Length: 338
Ligand code: PEP
Ligand code: MN
Picture 1 (cartoon, helix red, strand yellow):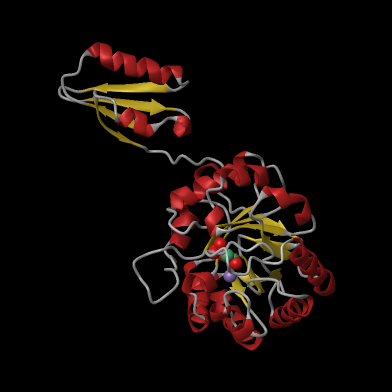
Picture 2 (cartoon, rainbow, N blue to C red; picture 1 turned 30 degrees about the vertical axis):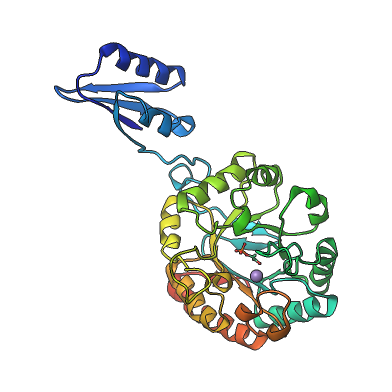
């Protein structure tokens, strides 16, 4: 971190700042020019309150030269992290496709969809039991009963399951869940993130609706700094001024993240676009951008889905997407494990 001091400041004030920095356990590199004094902070500056320094009367400007995230930072961990989910690997040259309905609705529905997506080539099954809905009057998910049905679908198909956890209250019921999803709305639910950091279960961390890449990585940092290294990031679109799609899929985040972090990153084009016919081109775009996988909503009867029918693919549409994605994978040097 570099602090530029305003011209003609009292030396005593500058010394006070330097001593305060040293008290934080940091070293100081001082550069005194004719007009400007520059104070370089050397060491782990992640705990330094940059805004506090900025508001000091003697300070002209403050610039961070080191990212505030450590565990997620590629600088400290150059190799790609591989997150292993029951033998299915996320990251490196692996590519995974997670598919299933937005919500678990009943036994017949989840088993049928699970079998269909497995047949089409999905490697993991998704299905929401706890649903974060904008309206309290919308279907809220089947809750614990939904988790039970999802586990039944896992037992019948052998597919690992991915489902959203909204509150730590139900954490014990998630026993047997292979990937716990933290949804966009909970990306900054720090108590939940810290609790999930105490587990070893892989966490699918979705990007917040208006989160910057750095805020998103700081949320990953919350999980990792508690001891859980198994974080998979998921770009699911951000809110912009555009209204023709549900959100705006930020594919540029993928190459940016690949440079900044070693964590695997997958894309959810269903929630990003919100319209089923736009899902396929964005799946292919995600592969091209370097994603490590996709999570796609599939329903056997989208017209009667209790949640997100408009963006859900029918199984045969999903199969077409899988085949096209498979065709593209050699171009980006990735492969599916089945
Ligand atoms: C979901 O995956 O069903 C979901 C609600 O996603 P998001 O948190 O990205 O909106
Ligand atoms: Mn959904």
